Image 1 (cartoon, rainbow, N blue to C red):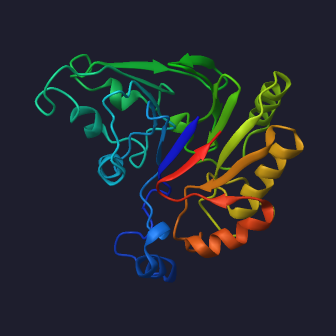
Image 2 (spheres, rainbow, N blue to C red; image 1 turned 30 degrees about the vertical axis):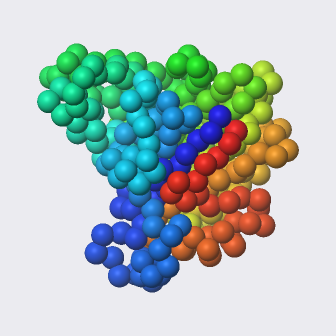
Length: 279
């Protein structure tokens, strides 16, 4: 399975709009891998993770062909992960010819704004609400939904995705994982699942969390490293697995090159827009 990370920034993008902080100024000056769109990804050209506001830009930038796309996984319904016009602009009046059906999977709370679209049937959108710890078939994949520590009103999820012997963990936009999440991952491990790639949230970068404070809704580098170590210690990663930090904010994560140097000792590489991760 090949996952293309189309956007690798947090909600405000990187560099952020009208921001003059040192990280944003450096990113503008260096360009390249320092320029990040909001988070979204595409698996094997046929499964989209989060139809967010920068999807059109990615289609143009990377020459993507989405006409064979049939399946969408939604982590949650925040505006940097779900743009409703992406669903409308693939429909009648905007695209000639027969409209391909899309199946959108996510929590019921995250799908609520999509469900309210009056043209849902006209757009050939099928909604499949899933709950944390559900395992379900989605096209050629077997998917397990895991609860993210984020906005509880959204019932946010991240996903373990499998096809034959390949397995991918896509765990973005979450604070430290719940004990129940670790238990579910351990159950997958006992069933023989070993991830060939793990994409792990790293929004807060070098910002430290004061001792004794409750877990946040994002992770810093120390927490990203601890979660990668937890996956390794539990035998959930293949020996050659790619561990990728993802979803960077300019408010905590340094520019790409500095981030790479900070994460390298832990065997973690930073994501960048257009990066392809093979599981």
